[in-house]
Image (tube, helix red, strand yellow):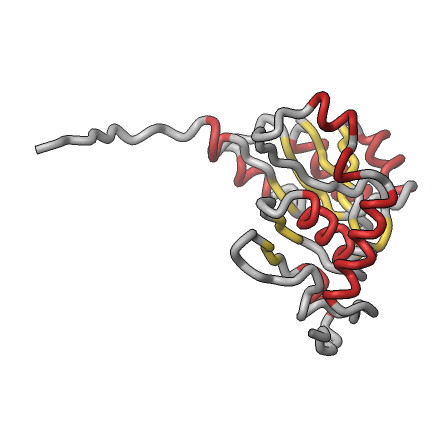
Length: 200
């Protein structure tokens, strides 16, 4: 079945979708901004041929080191700037290698990947800006340092404050002008409710 042409909407690059063994969703996204040039059946053939050529179905190292019934979870993460291409091929490769796999696609072909750089002083922030970082994580900085970083960056990158953030300090941090704030206390310090399971 051919994938229809999608509307030209840049937001469609980042509409998450999940492919499960029971969903029947093809590797090709029907809402991606860029129209993939192959039909689903063609993708299956191309990827299957490539996997066979590489001996992926009978890889000796995998057979010798991986427990066959072990399940794991992982993520493909961009470590440099770029534009995503070939998502349908990657999805189909995982589907063919493990029909039981569930795959979540966060970004479709054509999406631009952003790079986040962690900094703990203003000199590093200046270097990150010069390197055209998209997002700069300001780690364990004081409120004054955060304000200085906001002035230094001046909108040229997204600023995320992290480290030592609590529910009592988050307002003061927000007032420094940073764009995002990471608060670990929302999870690791939240109190547990006392619940009981009573049987009659």
